[in-house]
Image (cartoon, rainbow, N blue to C red; front, side, top):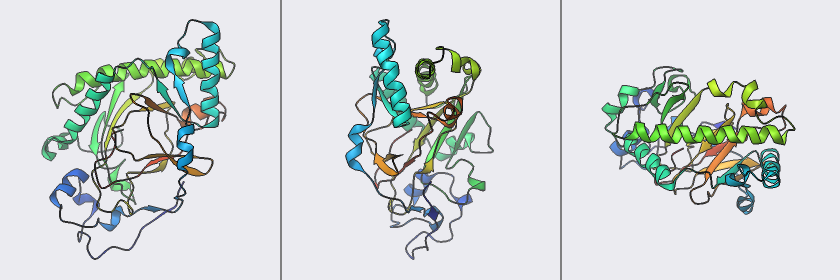
Length: 305
C-alpha cells in the first residue's frame, strides 16, 4: 500500500473544520465554492506515483459470450483466458456481458440523482455504524478513520435480502435488476474460475455457499476537488469479497497496481470492470490475488463505482 502522510495545512484552507462537521463532501464543496484549498484532514498524498500509462492497453478483456458458449472448445479457450487474466493481472474488463447499455446508463443516472438529493433527505440513511443494510456517508466509518477521503457513498445490502432506499423514484427497481444481473455474471465467472483451477464448475460456488452469500451495491461520488494533488477519492486497497463488478462514468480516476506501477484504467464502452477479491485469493490458494487499486481525484465530477 502507498504510504500516506498528513501534510501541513494551507493558510487558504477552510479553518477549524473537523470530520464531524462534514457529513457530505458534495454539500461541503457546494457551500464553500470560493475555497481554493481543502481541510488538512483530507490531505493524503501518496508517495508511489509512478504511473505506467503505456500498460493501460494491455489490461485483459474477457468476452463473456464466449465463456457461456455451448461449444466445448470455445468455452475451454475462454476459461483459459479468464484464468490467465486472474493470475497475470488480477483484473479484467468484460464485454458482451448481457447487461443492456440502457440499464447501465439508468443505474448511473439514478445513482447521481440520489447524490443530488438535498442533504437532509440523504441523512435518513446516514452512517451510524458498520453493519446497517443501507448506509450513506463520506467514509467507511468516519468517526474511526485517521485519514479522510474525498467521496460520498451509498452502500446497500442487496442479497440475500434486497434492501434499498425508497428515493429517488425508480432507483430501487433499477438497482434490483442490475444487482440480479451482476450476481448472475459473478456466478458464471466463479464457474469459469473453478474450471481454470482444474475443479468442477460449481466447486467454489458450493464451498463458499455463494447462493446464500452477501451482495453489496455501492455508489461512490467524487465531487470536484480544488486540490486533487493533495487528496484521494479512495486510498490503495484490495476488496474483501470474491469479485467486485464496477461500472463508471466517463470521468477517469480509477488506477490499479500492476508489477509495482500504477495504471490508469480506461474502460471500453459498455464494459464491466472486474476485481478479484481477497476471498477469491483464499479459495484459489493464493493463485488469483486481490488487486490493489485506488481512485484519484479531478477538479470536475468523478466516477461512480
